[in-house]
Image (cartoon, rainbow, N blue to C red; front, side, top):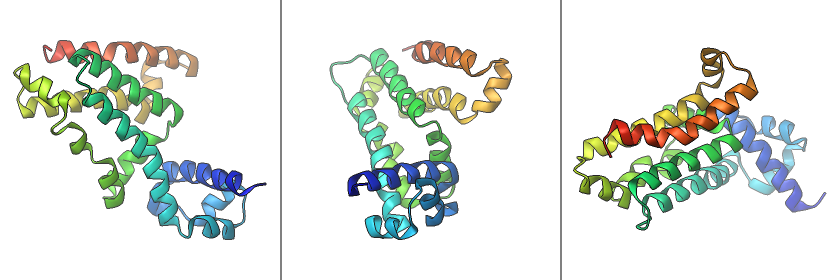
Length: 197
């Protein structure tokens, strides 16, 4: 097994364990067990749990955040198009990494400063072209916050509360996937209607 393959194996295992347990509850041994490697290899490649965590959040959260910033600051898309792209961006990453919403929630609750600084949700919205477009439509800064909060809530709850939502809907995995696909198409329209955009 080559070095790059071993490193990737450790990184993928760490992503799973961090997203499932959070930074504080994760032990380096948990990552080694998940990766099926010797504990010493984790220290060899990444030096510490902290440095491995920073690399994971930089990749997972950094890519997610950068994509959102690109959408928010695109001067060639309408508000309506931006809302649909925001929904699609969230869905694409949460479908690939279903534990990510709980991980984000957990790290914010634990006041993990490194994570919060990397994610910087306020920085995504504030001074964005999206915010400017909303202001030009007569929306105050408080309304901008409500629009974004409602959008994120409508997206995240069915991922965060997956088991509860399935029970509420009375659906198995396949039926729930269909409902989620319908939501993906409708959320932006709900927000447009709710806030008269």
